[in-house]
Length: 89
Length: 542
Image 1 (cartoon, rainbow over the protein chains, first blue to last red):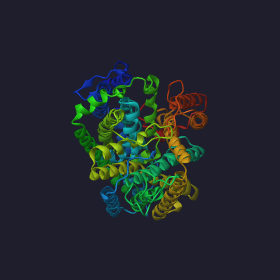
Image 2: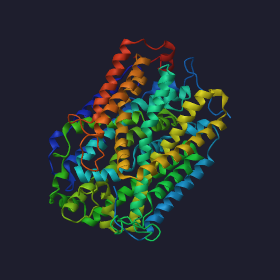
Image 3: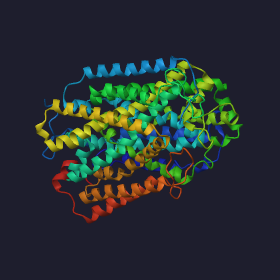
Image 4: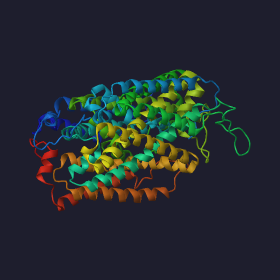
C-alpha cells in the first residue's frame, strides 16, 4: 500500500497482522483463571494486550505502509476522473 | 429486558434532560456552520479532520450494546466476551478502515460520490446493482434503527421507574403494581429520543451528526469509566471485586471454559467486517478532509474499544460473583433466569446508590444509542435523495437547495416511520424480541457482503455478473439461515444466532458470497478499460 511496489515494511506489517490473527485464538488460556495484577483474569488481560498490539500494528502500518499514491491519485485530475459538481446553488 | 428497580428521585431524569438539551444546543451551533450546499449537508464538504473523524466513526460504530449489552454478556458468559467481540473488532475494524475506507474516500472524492449505491452502480456499470443494493441496504438498516429506538424507550422507562407514580401508574394483570410503575411510557421515551436526534440532524445534516457524535462518544466513554471506578470502590477495590467472583459458584466467568466454543470464538472475526458495508459509515468516510485524517482513527480505534469494553466486562463478571452470593437482585425472564441486560443498571442502583451516577450512566447509554441513530437517519435520507430522486429526475435538474429539502423531507419521514414501527413492535414482547433477533442478523448480512466491497477496491477482474451473483447468493443464503434460526430452539429471551457446526452463521454466508463473486467473475466478461481506469490508480498494478 505504501507505493505501487510493496516495500519490505509493507510485507513485515502484513505478516505481523497474520500472526495477530492466529494468536487471537489463545486456547492456552481457555480455562486459566489466574490473575494479573491481582484482579485481571489472564484471559482478559491477554486480549487487552491484543488490543494494544493491534493499535501498535496499525500505527506501524500508517507510518511505514501509508498509501501515499492513493492520496495523490485522489487529488489528481485526469481524463478518467469525472467529478460531479459540489456546491452548486 | 427491563432493568433496575423503582426510585423516586428525579435527579437522573434531570441529568438526562440536561444532556439532551446540550445535544440540541450543539445541533443549533453546528447548523450555523452550514454552507447551504448539498455536499455540505451530505458529506460536510469533505472537510472533517482527524479528531472529529475518529470520534464520529467510533460513536457510529458503538451502539448501546457497548455499555449495557457487553456488561450483560460478560455476566452470562464471562471474560471471554471481550476476546469474542471487542479484541476482534479492534483488529478488524481498523484493518477495514485502512484497507477499504481510505480507497473508498479517494474514489468518492475523485467522482463526487455521496452514497454506496452510486459507487457500486458506476464501479460495476450496472444501475440494477445500485437499485438492488439500495433495497437490501435499506432493509438491513431498518431493524438496526428499530433496535436503537426501542432500546432507548426501554432504557428511559427503566431509568424513570417510580418517578411519576400517579401520572404513569401501571398494574400487573393480578392488580398488583407493575415493577415499572411511575415510569415514562415506552412511546414517550422513544419519541423524545427520536425528536432530539431529528432536531440536530434536520438542519445541520451530517455535520450535526458528526458534532453530536463527538460529544456523545466523550460522554459514554467517560461515564463508563466513572461507573467502573465507583463500583470497584464499593467492592473494596479491584482485587476484592475479582476475589469475590473467584470465591463464588460463578468463578468460571473468570475464564472461557464451556461458555463459548473455539470455533465460535474464531468465526466471530467475520462479524466486525460489517463495518465495511455499513452505508452510514461509508458516508462518514467520505467526510474526511484528506486520507491523512484516517490515521488517528485507524490507530486509536482498538484502544477506544478497550477503554469502553474492559470496564463493562469487569463489572459484568463481578456482578456474576455478587449475584451468586445473593448480593445482587435482578429481574427475571419467564423461565426464571436473570435478565442480563439489567446488570449494569442494577449494579449502579444497588451498589453505588447514586442518583447522579444513575443519571450520568443513563446519559451515557443514550449517547451510545443516539450516536448510531443519527448517522443512520441522515444516511437513509441521503440514499433516498441521491439514489432514487436525483437518479430518476436527472442530476442537473435539481438545485442544491432542492436536494437538501428533499433529503430533510425523507429524514423526517424515515424518523416518523421508524418511530411508528417501533411503537407497534413495543406493543408486544414477542414482536419486540423478534426485532432484536433480526438486528443481530442484520450485522451478519452486512458482513457477508464484505467480499463485494473488498473486490470492488482491489480486484480489477471483478465483473458486473460476479457482483450481482454475490449479492443474490448472499441474500438467498442469509434468508435460508435466518428462516432456520427463527424455528430453532433457543433459551427464552435469547437474541443470539444459532451456531452452525459450532460456527457463527456469518462464516457460511461470507464463504458463499466470496466463492460466488470469484467464480462468476472469472467466467464472465471483464468490465471496460474505461471503468477500470476510473476506479484504479494506473500507477498501481493488480
